[in-house]
Length: 444
Image (cartoon, rainbow, N blue to C red):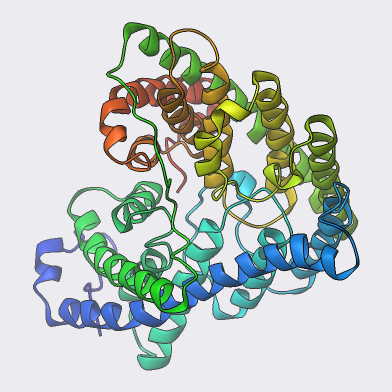
């Protein structure tokens, strides 16, 4: 099967419209539709397993050992075990446990079949035991790798170009419902890949098909099992009035602050990563203990739950907005500090994705500033998410959509503010980047 003719060196690339009219492209779409079902089901199972591990290790295990609730110190040994498991997986299994999250949403091609067990194990240990990372990067790698492995079993002679399209579609299917919308997941992969022009449409059509099928599978399995869809949703979004001039001013302030904060987090994580890679196992254990101590510090200082510092923050976003009045500005600032440091440490040594913790940090920062005059909580929540996401991901369109689609109808109201904050944060982030990194507006 060929979805794209081979191009001789020095020849013109194939016309995408011609490729789309070929029989091979139609066969490719059919294959993608079929593969989207088991891959999205596997992604759902992975997310369900992560959720069960979090409940088992943080809630059930302490009770089974006789504790009345989860002790505030519990994350320290829990994250030490996570560091040991992740360090051993990265050191001894093929594929170094997947991509390094400190380097952003890097698209390096589909993972080989031999690398998939290491990617899955490192992600499960990281996400299930409390590292401050999200599941999107492992899902992208696992979805693409599984799709390519399956199609090579069915068609050993598949051309590299067609195989790359199938792998991309597998990634689309795996993250189809995670971000709350199959379109948003597709947009993330599209912007991160750097494709443009007609070739974008050629690759995007199979991906959109896989995303749609994957979203349906997530919905069906969530209803059938009663586990939900593990999608990014907010149960209740307070009403926000039309933007004011004061809020546009706050959008600029938040955008600038997020750029500096995101740059600091990223530089710290890259510095720590160099140190961790020289002494993988013992250093990853130490990084796990550090995350646990930060969670302990927050819990003891505020009386809050240590889990607010741990994990991706995806499930905590709704409660953060709905219970904003319960958080003082000081509590939010301490939460932001502990979460940001734990995020940097997790980026440097564990395996997962950077999106959800950046959303949580931005949301908490916006809510903290909403305690000052001229900024309501919902607007601050959305502005902070957009500004912090683009500071960490350098994907401006995806950052705007993440902040606005999450809020439903209220997202349309705050979209102008989000756009201002994203643009300010993006421009300053590029200016703060080293000259070599500043030439790339998105990871390739």
